[in-house]
Amino acid sequence: MAGSPIIFPRGREIVLGVSAGIAAYKSCDVLRRLQDHGFLVTVVPTESSLNFVGKATWQALSGRNVHTSVWENSAEVSHVALADRADLIVIAPATADLISRLAQGRADDLLTTTVIASGCPVLIVPAMHPQMWLNQATVANVELLRKRGFTVLDPAVGRLTGKDSGIGRFPETKIIIDKVLELSNSVAVLMNRKVLVTAGGTIEPIDPVRYIGNRSSGRQGLAVAYEALRAGAEVTVIAGQTDYFELEGARVLEVETAEEMLELVEAEFSSHDSLVMSAAVADARPVSSAEGKIKKESFTKIELLENPDILASIGKLKRANQVVVGFAAETESNLVELGRDKLVRKGADLLYVNNVAQGAVFGSDSTSGALLSVDGSSEFFDNVSKHEVARRIVNGIAKRLELVNG
Ligand code: CTP
Image (cartoon, rainbow, N blue to C red; front, top):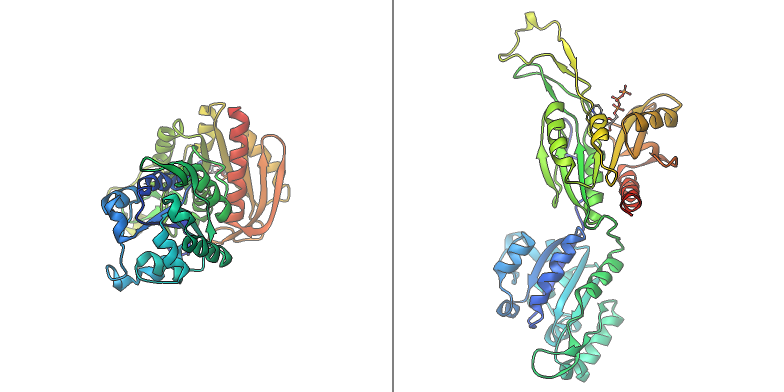
């Protein structure tokens, strides 16, 4: 784990503000669907909205602490931290009172303070009684907010909480989510898909102190996992040794050796739609690992045994509706030819071949190479970020999954 920690991009963050309308209970579903799309959500309810849905519900659903007041967590200066971190603020439901407070630029609770401290887009989803929505004060407040760049959805028309009906209903969840996707500029191409990613290098013990390892940082695999999460997939990461690891939202299984990795990949593969084999698996391991530390006088020779090729063995187990992605590192000029040969030999559908002729790909954040597909197409990359390649891989998986699943 040499070197300084690498800053890994965090997932897209949404602050979900909830004000005191009966539709607060419908916002629980909005939260769930946002999570389906890979968003990480912090819920900020107003104090009075807790009469409809309590803190415990929001905390359990979001998996995060929930506060209503700036005084609850003052050491962290929550409103600034939340405002800085948010990629989007969604307020659902927004009552007439909250809309009025936002229009005045007030900062009298955690939610309004967060809004005023943030620079990200804000989506307001009003829900209230028709007279309140049509009241001139509300009409003027909404107009003002829209003029200032807030996106305010129109409420739906239909049955309301009491006996009456009209405009003021909380819009359908799908309408809200579509707006969120539009504002956050993201498309969940792997929605309802499960992706298994291996990342980092395996280590093969020589004795309790020493091991054979490699220079893999795990960045490329983590970038694929991150982009798959962003695309709405459920992600499992089987991680060997990596430089840095913080990937909220993924299920992470840690391993050391190639054999452990093979065992886990075999156990997990059938329940996933896709496998991305970005781990740098050690090609060989010591024939045996000594129980005690080998004394330096005897430490002269390590007898090696070839490790199983995980990608090749999984290629054979692959169902027609699964997509397998491999990687390759080549130094020769006939990069594409070598990559294509590896793709076919190991039964992969896609393969990213890294050009390592000019040196450092390991530990670096950029890469040059080609993404090859079993359909014969290839896409070339010249000194791009590993995230760019990860995004193309995720799109490639989505396209192929669609093709092979009809
Ligand atoms: N791989 C694997 N198991 C191994 C070795 C490699 O699953 N024991 C996978 C890697 O995760 C990668 C792909 O195979 O997706 C290609 O790895 P690479 O090292 O380029 O190929 P090798 O098969 O080791 O061939 P060579 O080093 O001889 O080029």
